[in-house]
Length: 291
Image (cartoon, rainbow, N blue to C red; front, top):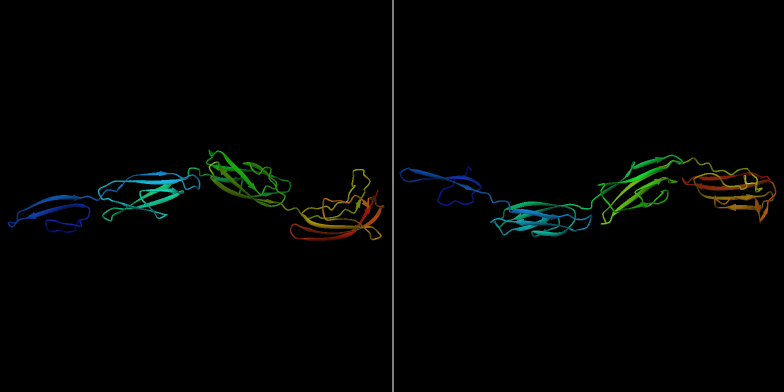
């Protein structure tokens, strides 16, 4: 130390080694050295208990010693005080320890997560499926040793299973799927995958000829096509009578009117349909019934 002190008693000395030199009136001198030690860190040990999942089950306890007590302890975050704190969630907590001399010391407690795991869907976050193609989706868990897990997929439409770790995806439309994985201790994680389905071209049409003769071939007249959301079809005979109408693509005309087979010959249809992309189809024309 570079500071100079005089007198038989000195105070407010920083830690270090000091040499005292005493000189008498005859100019004779004698010296001695003294070491001023810095107080030892008061933390003997730190005991922590990890939390489970998102539960506040963790704790931390400081064991203090030294001759500069009593000590005050403040923790952050949380504005907690004392050598022992409880009901902690996963995270890092910093203790500020102040001794009787106003000196401060620090200690960190790391509260881990005993049940932590991550879930991820493979083969990718986004998948493109062509018409008629399906894809196997797998949920990968890390660490792989995690046991007793339950799986919930949403939405369930287009999936071969809604509570499996591995399943087949074959949606009719492009869909964002979410899987939530939960352990028996309540730990959970979520992942998602976007399955994009190739959109087929619209090809809505009404056949112009059908033969309702119960031979198993072309016995019904149906509105054909894909991506139809709503439709209305009306069929009239030559006299202008409405012989058939439907708002359901699955409801086809069997060639009867008021319970009896209609006569062969020409008929007129009017079709109105809307597609899943908002396109409106308006169509009309002639069709023939043959036997």
